[in-house]
Figure 1 (cartoon, rainbow, N blue to C red):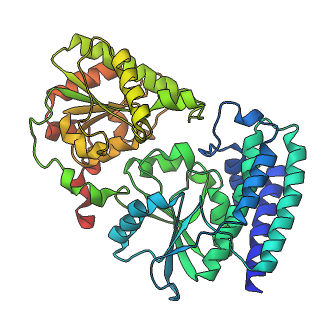
Figure 2 (figure 1 turned 90 degrees about the horizontal axis):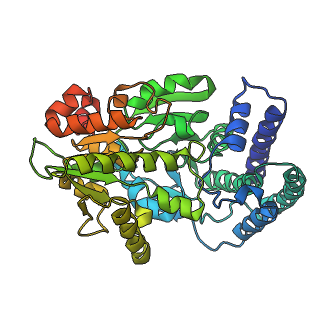
Figure 3 (figure 1 turned 30 degrees about the horizontal axis):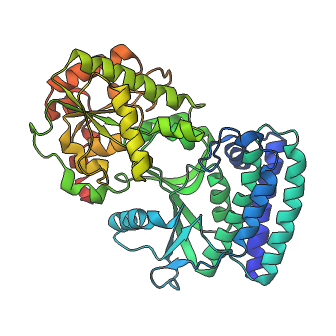
Length: 452
């Protein structure tokens, strides 16, 4: 009986979201959920022509049906019968070794249950599953009619799968008696739907973002608790709080901080001197694959412009060498990594280019190989600052404030001239002076001594 009640609660949330979206009830948290779900970016929609795919509804309906036949089991790591069982919801099982130890490092207690969106089995009893497949089929027909006139057909189709995933999560939270769940996937456009479902089920949902701008994915946020994982987020949040429904806000170090301890730069050093690291986002490869990027696909241009300025600067400063630190997607397969090296060697012709001796090492393990690093926009930059290294953001060509006008904007270059000036000065300053001059001590590991 309880499983049916949980199903009805999620359906109630779903229809309130649609209704408030249709009547444009802009002061309602259900409208905020509608806005994010229908207009927000999703990394799960891939391909240059995805939004024009006339079969998108059918494809996502088939993927949803496949969920009914999954054989995987929920990853239970400890006793979940306690009234305060902790759950963690993330994209896939490869993230467990990252997020599990992170939560344990902060809370000093382990996660009881892991829910992986990509392979989570369907929750609920037999009757509830019949309800789910019936409703799913009706919604697929309904959405297919809307898709005839909709500009983002894959986006609409994805909503079918997300509807089922949130139903399944709600059922599992009930079955495992989970009273608090940590969401590492708030960047997905259905996260407000998830927050509302948890709220109605009286499950405390804590949303944990990466140390990136809130503007990217959290302009609409619904959760019991939200974690600031970078100091600039506290200031940036003020711009968006009119569409937030959050009861508590806390501040933690960034995810994975416990793994960075061996790479702290505790004193000014000459190691890596006169080396500039380019922290790639692999935008050339994403563009080649037709992956949609943020900021209306302007991220492709920002990285390209950044590389153009870096090349010009290094040609004028032959004493400085360039180290390419690749994005994980560029080194996932030997063939792709070979193409990546060809790409960078061709682009930076006339510059001394170096690549990691061991490409499988994470970028953080090579922080001390470069005196200064630059990236268009990258979460690795925050990790590098946290470890005590000189770091520059360079979304060259952008117009917006990426970090809400906080101190971090002191090291953001949006024009070629700004980037050249930042590079010139950064190579002249010691690490200690760099953090002092640009007012970045809050980003340094020494600021988080309570967690270390």
